[in-house]
Length: 295
Image (cartoon, rainbow, N blue to C red):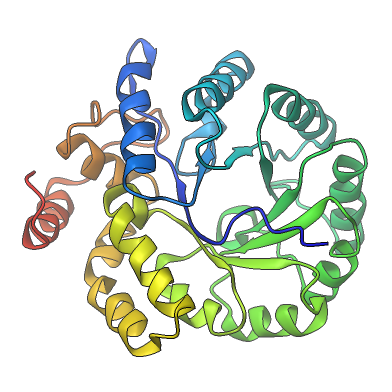
């Protein structure tokens, strides 16, 4: 039986915020616009959504709002990872009870883990939830890398469905694809590697770019899945300058500036994140204007 949560593009959503807290008016507007633009799934309270600086109360309220607003139109994947496995279990159980369709769980950060520790930690969560889990491998942020053999072991669990691969290591991702033998979906976690990872059997991308260009990111994946490999590759390469600009500073600093310019709330981030440097922001907005956006 397939464990696939979505095929194509899931937007790693920004969370519009201001000094008062989460800006739910603009967040709701963003959710509806993403769905109207044909997005395949939505990720709430992940890295791009600044889940790491939300209080527990905010995190839960934000997930409930997301699930209620989306109302089953596309799958909602809740960011529930933590470097404290007990807290990850608690938050994951809450997200499942609130109606999330899946869970995105980053590896433990700072305290990190051995490969054996990763297996035990993820298994501990997977054993007590009733929704599929997407592992999130982003060693540049966490200092912790999920190795291919570890993925193969975790892929045997019925509640572990996929991995978001943001290691940037195509050779490692190829090894993972070979070892999991289709028992675990692979999503690109880097917008500059969507086509390369799909060429290894990947099911799509969990994307920052699609905050700004949801239709176009979906079209890129659609072209690939329909066999238009040349067209998909052309789109991948066309958007590289914009992708580089969206990652010219720590995510989500640039995409927050982009979304504010598009009218989705203030360019407000919580410390330790700070607004984009003016010269970098000018380059990003120019690239967006060159693509026809009014910013």
